[in-house]
Image 1: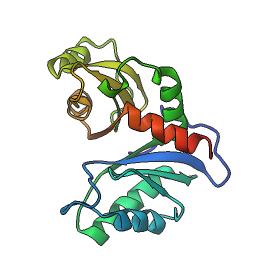
Image 2 (image 1 turned 45 degrees about the vertical axis):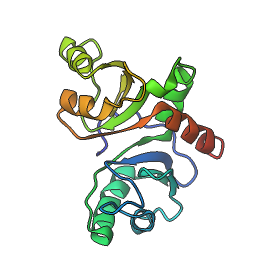
Image 3 (image 1 turned 135 degrees about the horizontal axis):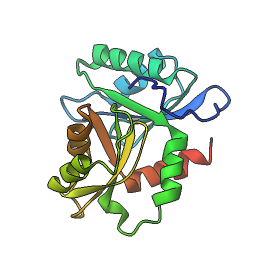
Length: 191
């Protein structure tokens, strides 16, 4: 995802802005997926040797003054190293901190998913967007530039990625709210 004029950029941290990247459709360690070493090396090639991988689902925390450039270079490097192309979407860590602060105490957090996408800001009042979510047994809870928080109507189901892709017409990648909360707990304190 490239920088967009509507994307709010927080104050940079020492050494750059701290960001979170979601690789799309990654299960590290499984055949047919980039390995942990490939992902780590891809971010090193992109100038972020201190990038931290979080869980085994292609979630990466990194610092950069040019995160869109880092992600583009990492995508190419990971594909060249692993032979598996995967899109990478990113957002400032501050976005996840705000979402965790606002929604972290939600009842049944396992029904919520945080999705990154390349389609600007979804209008939650758009009846077509609400209808698409409803068709997919979920609802839009909150949105911002390049992200959406979705609540699935049935625990254990995950509908954020396909729903957001249909609404925006762009690729998306989602993580459960409990994952976002653990990530924020770990990385916000060390920011």
